[in-house]
Image (cartoon, rainbow, N blue to C red; front, side, top):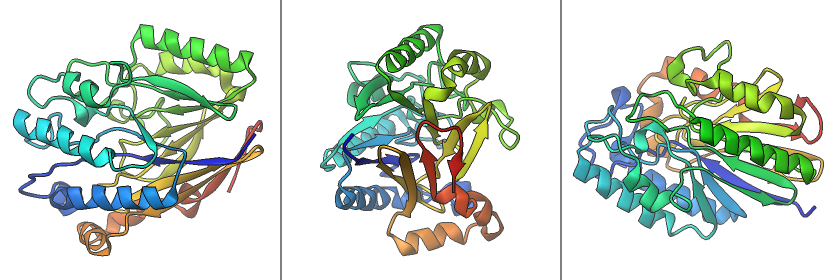
Length: 297
């Protein structure tokens, strides 16, 4: 195979007309446009084959008092910013990408869906990328949910990967299943037991699950499968993932958005919590060995 690289970004929480920052100043909504702009500049410098956005593009849902008009404006602005990317960007929805008044996903899908869907898949150099829509819910319920139909589609995609000798990378907004640290249903897909039942037989083909939602960096194994949780762009440590893919391994690096003053403002909001959000070195820089069950750090 030919080595390539891609980027994973998540939780941009764009709110162009924000009158305040949220989470006690940890989330920098008043600077969300500048963060998104600088992120795109850095992504273009990185020159990936493609970008994957892990959801919560904007501040819809129930938590930010965003009006329906502000929601539409935020989606339009995110779409325009995304058009500045030189590489193709694939989007999956987060719980805050739903209409804050109706809970509908229609406006999001109109701009960021693939053939009208929130899920999609594609193959690049013998890796099948499966991007799941975990927002099959009537409104922002924090947790995710995957329908029976989508789970059946995922199973078919994994069978194709086996037939063609491909590795698999998954992308979901919420965690696909809980672990010791993240037990609450708000952290994960609510029907994670069904998810696990579907994917477990394909464990040796699955390289990992990239997720957002938690606004922190964490790398762990659950049920033998690797979960890679990535911090939000909107708050400290404001990092995204550079992913370099080689025939025998995948190297993952964390890169902060280069806006030092905004980062410092978020960092100052709750200093004691910052080490928890940034994670250990092993949560920030690591290597996935292909066709092996261990991760070396």
